Length: 199
Image (cartoon, rainbow, N blue to C red; front, side):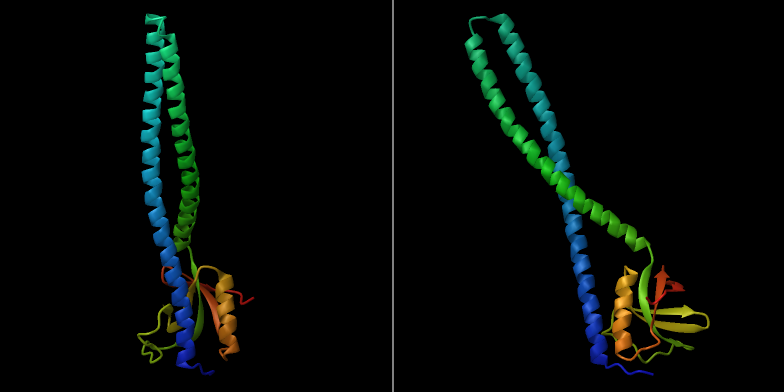
């Protein structure tokens, strides 16, 4: 059986842990962006309501004053110009909120795709099987390992990957280290589904 130094194995697990931490940070950013999206949607809806009321008020005021007094026509036109200027500011703000909404929609789509992948299968590289569960290979420093009972054996797998390409790349590294019988297997809900083609 090939021999792997525990320090090499720990280095591999550290790389996997770093990738997992990065994924968790991205998920936190996605959750934060979702909160921002909800608040910007609320702001946009409130702003649209106020804008509509403002426009109705300006139109009602203009109509009423134009019909009631003809000598104040000049004052009414000044009021309308001021209203139009403030409408341009509000329109610019709405356009800015629309751009932010599009950015947050992209982040939301990524989050939904990630959530969908969590429900799907994962891939891991199995390096050994044992008849009993008394394994001396385990250490508290190792993460991203799978111990799965496949009657009558207990299989020992390294890594948790979303894509089969990542798992195959990791398998290739292990084969170069001397684990020539390592193979990629797919898992879902803690159970092995099948042994995957290594290429």
